[in-house]
Length: 542
Image 1 (cartoon, helix red, strand yellow):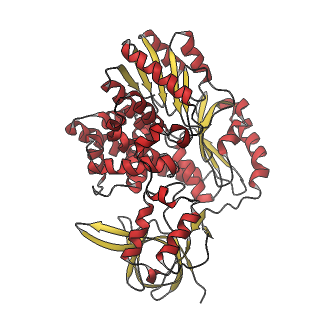
Image 2 (cartoon, helix red, strand yellow):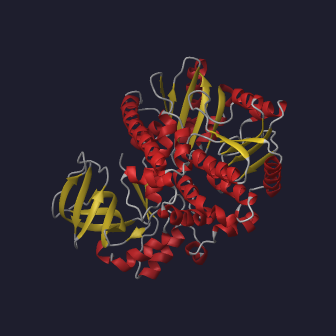
Image 3 (tube, helix red, strand yellow):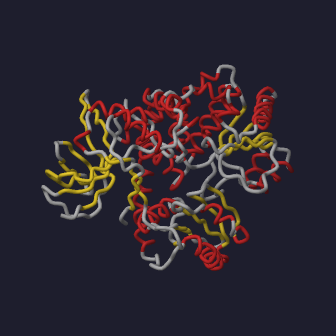
């Protein structure tokens, strides 16, 4: 689908200082010094209230006190995680910290297919029978009302640490450590830091915080910028055998690992094994001190990722045949779809059609659904409005998941389409490409790109700068990639540009186009070269 361009500033900057000023303004950044020089992670621990205004410090202190008591009294503790990248990384951070403090602690990553998402009442009772007296959730639990009650009934104290949107009614837990300012791993790091005498000793876990924050699509501003910037420094040391092995098997270049590596290479591989196999394998990878074992586990994750990619593509092709042209909200389901990849398929459907999508894996008694939204539609609130028909629901503004009795599917589809029709009537379905400002390609040089690199790391809230040259001249072109799916252009005055997964468009040498692009420095074997990454292009009428 063609993108709708939104150019934030239509004035071409006169110099690099003016360019930086516009980029900061476009991102709503008013304190440039604080942005370019974010506080050290340890400063977040002493200024908790200012950095996390929605965090209740009394709950954090209550959680820390209970955990310390459990360690001193040799109580059996379980860190209850999740099978996605944020949940796995959060489990690794908190479990390794507690284990290092001498706690009798075990991690638990739920089986997606046997237990489902979040806390599971049967497993809680089993853990109680095994003598566990404290369960600490990471990246989950904020909606677990029935499960919290079950824990109370059998004498298990429950501490919930979560960042997902709060429901109207909260579970009755011993303590709830909640903030939307961090991902689940960030909160786990915060709790872990409060437990130890020297918080700086937890700097080695910031690699996991950085990967999870980027992969979980958290805004890279404020506290998150501080954690991710420092976390990438730790990541590039590759002191963690599991990540060193994963970088190796994924074919990444060590030394310059950042948002792309976290969000598009490492994160998906950590996620994949929980989607199609067992998420505990990813946890073992992140926690093992043995490089040989790490390489074996990294190979498992890499194979799972390839399986996930093939399964997603096959399901997406099938799903497209079920989409109706007149659907404002796309809701599709089938009993052959693997529940581990329906979220990815929903994302692909949104990209293809520019409409919000709900993709459901239909089961005999219960069905699992995953939803992805478009700008302007809070999908988790839309789903919560249908809670009478759902067994559970949770998520964020742009992405959510739920469970429903299969017998209620037809009624659910009719109801949610009826309730969202008016909300979607005024939305432009085309995906938006936000462009910062016009900047002719011949203005790009090494000094300017070096200035732009100060905005790293990029992500939600701080996207990569995107410029437009309204009169870019094509000097040459060729298809590249294993399946010739990418397009490489030579552009006046001599820069190479790459368009990944290029749209089908006829281009001729000498043709002038409007080009939306991001400049970057490609580093390899001690050499540097400026390249342009094409975000989109439009033909210019002659």
